[in-house]
Image (cartoon, rainbow, N blue to C red; front, side):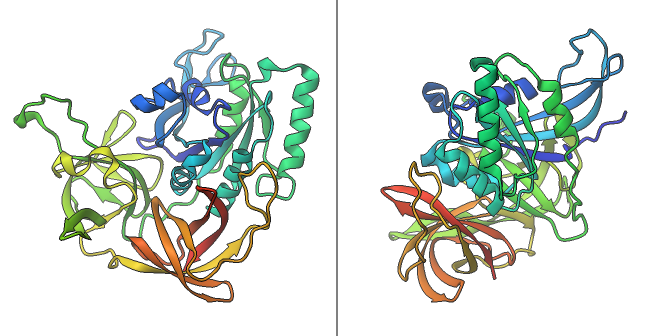
Length: 404
């Protein structure tokens, strides 16, 4: 079977810290996403991690695998090309998790059978709901660490937990990521995730989740390549050679005043996984190599920005108007706490597409609020926004909004 050059799905791995998301990603793709020194030291995912996988079916026994050869020894042929995004499960990294949820089509919600439902499990499920993610597979991990009775109790706990939620009818698949047990069943469920209808006719919008300088120290001036943008093309088409603009863009400080300058550049190359492509359509994760000085893209300095064809983006704004829907309870806490109404002058965290900003509430009218923002945004009407409230020094998800 011919395989597409671009991944057809972007799948997020969500769930509480230490429930095995990164190990699962390794089983699915052969890649560890915890590649940053601080992540390796602390053993948790801090930034968004990316990896692609080609799901294959054995020509002899028919089971699915992500390996080149089936465990029966038969040849495996490709059936689907997908991207995975590993998002942080730590409570202090909720904002990064939300920006990851903005660029996925589906999610694996990982729950460890030996630990059960944790505060961040609840918060992540609510975040997926807030971002409009309806295709969810629940992965009951670490079943090798519990008895059959404990696994069954944990399964029933999960069923009760998701009742009434967006994941109520989601499959629950028991696995051991560490041992590689039941991976073929999980891959069957992933293969059944429908490919969403993509908008290829509208003007392109590329949401930047990461930005890099990929040059090694000591690279000669002649061999330096331009800065790289990582993210998702949500609509339209982009081609090598296109001139793009990036907003809000580069941060410039003048006389203690922070300004944002639109960045303009040309697409030098594009890549998905190991595949170099000349034209990109909406699908999985995409890396765009630009002609920018790599110093402008290093250390995620352009993450949260939007890239589009030159002259097609609206002006940035430090004012936002949202239609808001609040949760009944604050999620991510050990004890249930009611969400109180939003107040005037209250600071709120907003996650809009891949952008994270803080705003002060300036107007409230029914279920609509207006905010003055610390970091400007691109006002794309209809965009979903996760809303966080600061409680005891931590941002907690309290609801979601839509830009109007």
